Image (cartoon, rainbow, N blue to C red; front, top):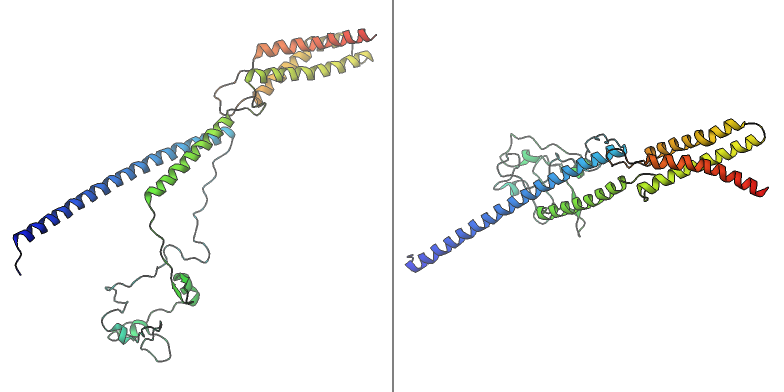
Amino acid sequence: MTVSFEEYAALARQLAEQHRAGEQHAAAESARRRDLHAAVDYLHQRLTAQGQRLDQLGQAIGVDQPPAGPAPGPAPGRPSETAGWPGPPSSSDPAAGFGPGSAAGSGLTAGSGTFTAAGTGDGASDGAAGAPGRAGVGAYPQVPAGEARLALPTAASPTGAGVPAQRAAAVDPVVELELARRMADEADRHGQQAELLAQRPALLPTWSPLARAVAVYVGCAAVAGVVMLALVLASGVGMVDGFTLGAWTCAGLPAVAFFGGYLVLGRWGRPAMVAGTPPRYLPLGFLICFLLVPMAYCAYLLLVRGLR
């Protein structure tokens, strides 16, 4: 058979086009792999930064890192990953017993779905020992029925007979990376919300620092005013003298109210994620406490005299 020059040229052009297409496909696959590796590196760095930030948040709120648990083992009733998986036997395996004439020599009945190996004649298979030309090979080890069900996962067929289960489809790395990126975005959003909550104190979180300080000092001064009224009533019945009442009213109770507000702001008015010490407005607190308590005493005196 002779090949004309035109046919040879057409074949050469076809081979050249196939070669160029193969090179383009290889270049596209290489670029795709580079992009995937770059995306994986970026996600790894991002998740590492998120883990460090979560550790900082846990340390700020006083939550220790949980200890690493034991490695999860295989689920009950399922084979481990090292268990054998059913598959087509290799032609180079001497124990497989597959070769020319093996089906006929072992009594394989087409269409019946059963194997009847030539052996002892009592219905049991001799494995490779029953195959022709394999006299020196021992029989296959017998596997119990329960272990056989575990080692050979089957799926229900319309006819009722067990058939090997289909293997899982290949996972698309692009889809998995996109899902991981979305989860990282969601983790960033929740982390930002946690940081915003951590920047708020436990006491009056929606108030400004100045308003919070004023409310705390006024509250402590009000408590001191109640105690002052109790001392006034005790002085009226002769349990407390006038000098003690004046000392507590002008100095003792205002000082106690001031230091009480100072401690309350330092304990419950400090955000967990704010570096340093938040302002406690000491001059303002001193003024509030040392003015309100004596003013409350004066107001009480005016009220009593007005009622008389």
